[in-house]
Length: 317
Image (tube, rainbow, N blue to C red; front, side, top):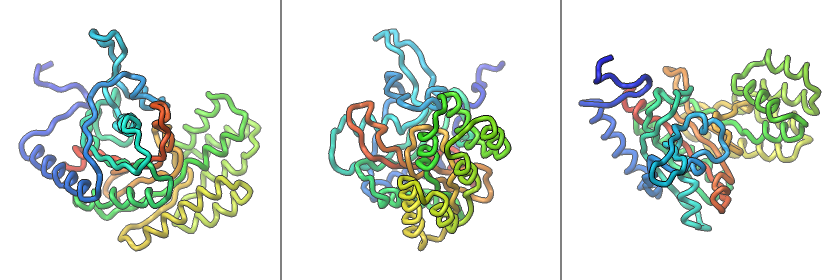
């Protein structure tokens, strides 16, 4: 192997590529500053318990090593969101706080969202508001970010993981069984769901089956209200999506609904969203609500945000 070769899944930007990236980074930071989002630059390395929090997916993607100075286990950040939770908790504010970032991250393996193991994650997070107006604000900012990067047209997908989480909380499944059912929904495998339901006696088997097929245009939300009319918590989750889609109606985007959508990171607790373009097979930007993620740091706060791989999008022209 030649000494100049990079590890598999690790890449770099040079020349015109680096210049294009830098121009987009500056433009994004100007946009976020104009919208009131303060720049934060989290450290590359933290105590591993601060990085992992409640997400097995983040755990699996985090490089870990023993610090020769402190003797503690450290981790290289694989996702910025847990670090923002720590930063916000340290601030101990009871007001709405807004953060933005553009940081290189490192993952043990690539996933369906990032193009490499060494993406540059850009995004924004809003803390301190549980109202859907906060979700609308960050969705609009995500769409403005993509427009600034000349990515379009955009199809916006809306979902709410609270629906699945509420259903599964009413079942007596083991952790292993719950994880298997979750993975079935992540893979969107109707045949696997039918097998699972045949082999397990579930209180809401019919609702799990209905959830798997609840996708399409915004009219799906009315059907969902009918399916879950006996579950008040789920009805509120659906009504939130109706409100959000209504507030976004004036934008020049197509909106689709996917109520079976589960994000790869388990810390999402409510509304989730993704931006797609017909020329790409995966989401270009994604985000959602993750209330309580900062509880591990002593202050549970409502939060919502989004992120994308700026290094990838800066090279898509």
